[in-house]
Amino acid sequence: MSFRTDIGRLERCANDEMMQNYVDDTIKARLKGESQKERQIINELKTRRVDKDACSSAYTSKTTTEQ
Image (tube, rainbow, N blue to C red; front, side):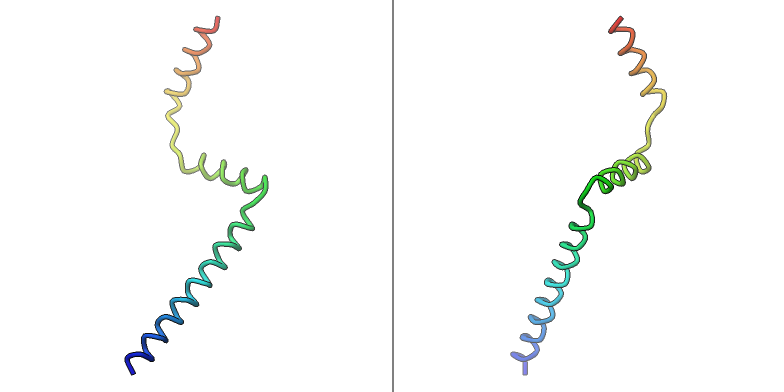
């Protein structure tokens, strides 16, 4: 009886792993292409908080050193 339950658990784990691999492969396939890169950039911009003062000071220091 214990052996059968262990086999059942192994089968469930194998099925879960196969399903997870299928899902991962499907996601990877859908994420390919330029539109995915655009979405990734947009999501990074949405999640990242940019200090505007730091950006503007970096820009002004860069332009003053170039002149």
